[in-house]
Length: 148
Image (tube, rainbow, N blue to C red):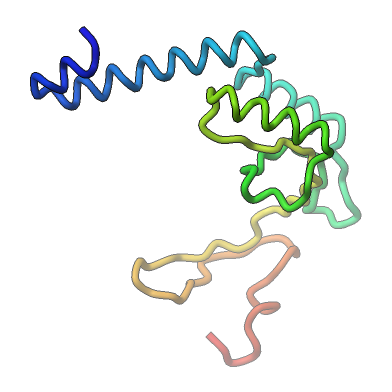
């Protein structure tokens, strides 16, 4: 039975579910036929390899730097891709198999250890210093004498 017949019988939710399933099947068939694909476990593998390859300890004992693969929604990407990539993007849009696009790029990450734990109360804008450790940042670096 097709979705329109189900809608005429009053089965809106079932019809919509069937339409979504058919649409997903069509989009996936087009995408798998025309493009190489990367599964989440391959992205994870690449991410771990990139981390291990680029992991750097800085002079600050509680800070590390490494490269990471990040995904930026195309609408928020601040640069214009090369003309040949714009043509490829147009072709992909014309196939109507993708719901959105992301730009994947390698970005340097600076990660600092967590030296302060703050308590939070929903509805209260203040944060409450519960404990701190190491020398990354201390509550005394944030608050002046007599504050808080």
